[in-house]
Amino acid sequence: MNTYINLFIIVAKTAILVLGGSITYYALRAYGRTGNPSLRALAIGFGIVTVGALIGGVSHQIIGSTLAVGIAINSLLTAVGFGVVVYSLIVK
Image 1 (cartoon, rainbow, N blue to C red):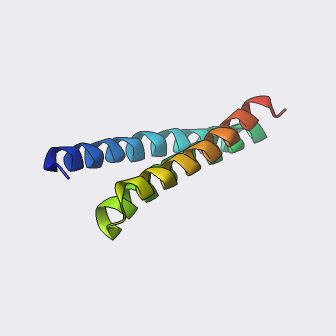
Image 2: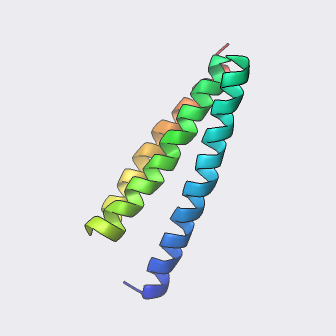
């Protein structure tokens, strides 16, 4: 695979880890202040999305699985995480 594509994937996954981790952290802090269960669910949802990106990237870049496997892992966990985020928006 092209070296520039690998570098781009690493940079993008790092940005997702930093930004997704930040969203998760601030949602958990807000939950701690308010006790609102929707904020806890929001944090969990974004945490799942972030971990999915991390696991997908690690499986491809470090473990050596195919790019398709990394994308499948990332996509599955992104879908689950976004499902939890949607739940967080409708829970009372």
